[in-house]
Image (cartoon, rainbow, N blue to C red; front, top):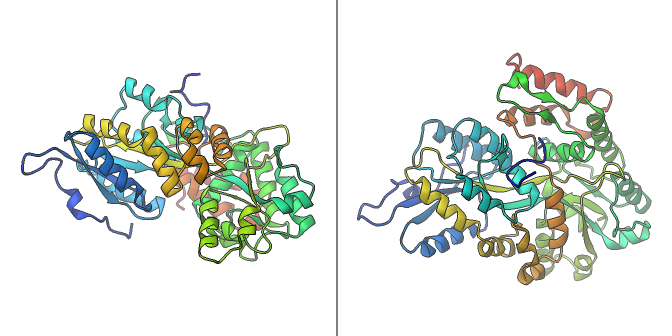
Length: 432
């Protein structure tokens, strides 16, 4: 299967800032066109890359950035509203992978030329290619990719007799945490992170929340009411009932899990690479002993079944080019610059956001900042997107309603009830 095809079917209250960047696509003084790049909030990395690419263009264009809301749902709302009005000021947009299918299906993304699609997927980790693909076509440019890995305390794993040089299962992690009376971290809050967790479990069990996507909602084949869905639900409940999660597990997000693994009862957490930079920052500020940082290890996400490789969650950002932009060709040219190997390495080391290009993980500077880079790359090659569908917002809404709190899910009934609600919502017979 070529790089341009998918492995399978997976997976605002805040105002826009920098109002000047919402100006027209050209310059009043006859200067180069200004390309408006709508970015997700970060630590200034995308603005720096915009400046770099503006300079590298040799005067062909200038890139101005406008920051979207913090929450992914708010980002989607801002962009959808503008694109539905055929807003030509949106040249480039940083898109969360779950929204790529919806934007493409609605005609909000300019078609990616075939030669460009080949270039921007060459050497890219498979998970990032999958996330930028809809209907077997690359519809966005992979920029950076993210994934969850298993962070653990090496002293805990050793005391529990867990060989972390080999793949481990969720059952083994639970047993090890119980034997050492340490915390297991996962995202139990009623939020997008809950869908991320469930989707990873279902995909790792060999299934998909959506078995077969389709343009029409009535043609979507759902996959939760299956052996994989029941197994995923079983593990979610087992973690919640293990006695090794925090007292506030039903509201725990990624930050709570990160803080848990560096605490006195730290054991295991499935989480993003920011855990490492968080722990380093705590050491620098004097809030954490160096010995704790030295005790942190990283491995690929736990398996559901010992003989089946895990399919960790996929995150990151793709670059979509606005279909109504007056500078589509220049926007694609700028997107190629933005996702260059040099810029991806810069973004990884300064903002902690992993690359989509596999070669970046061998960069000595990257390895110095993130010794876990090989584990992250391996995870990204295995990673599976969240359900790719124009109706993703409805799908995740149902998951968050039916699978929360994790301590209440039942493998014999929750997948079935969630499927029934999804079918009703997709058919327009019920509202969330």
